Length: 113
Image (cartoon, rainbow, N blue to C red; front, side, top):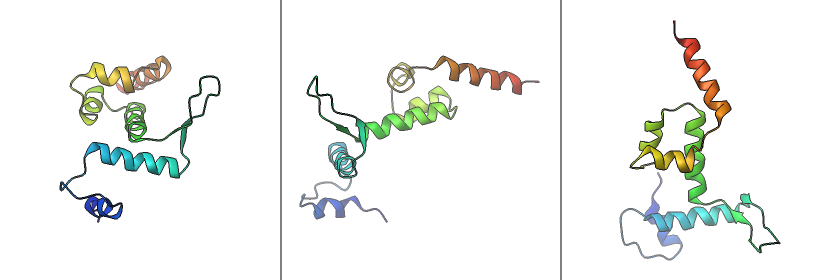
């Protein structure tokens, strides 16, 4: 069984809550991404930007994109992502791909009698 409290004590963090906060989870996932060498963006010598390793936000973005690609209705994705409006979800996780949208429409229309 997953017990986040035990993870907190292993790294020397005092257990303050029954449930870890978003900041702590983000740091743990970021550390896993870095230790695992999961690179989402390469370094840019021109700008001095360092390598970007996978973070909790990258997992969230991936979830939103995969739900969209699987044909999950927009409002369901919005609820899963816990956004107050579809516009926020669309802007960040489903900017749109006209070819994919056309395929979805074709499939829906083909299924109609």
